[in-house]
Length: 79
Image (tube, rainbow, N blue to C red):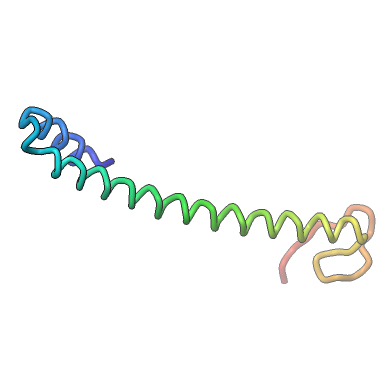
């Protein structure tokens, strides 16, 4: 939660029950932002898992980055 919103939330605490709805709205906005961040992190994690799986398959099949038979210690470079 951004600092400004934390400060706003603390100020609302002093307003008592009259600010309950405003506090809920602030917390729901924060939850939405967290959900968006979580989705982005999950997508990045899936992409990493795909790349890791790709390289594990290459190693298991004895292939280089271009799908050719790989020498024992062949560095993978893009051309």
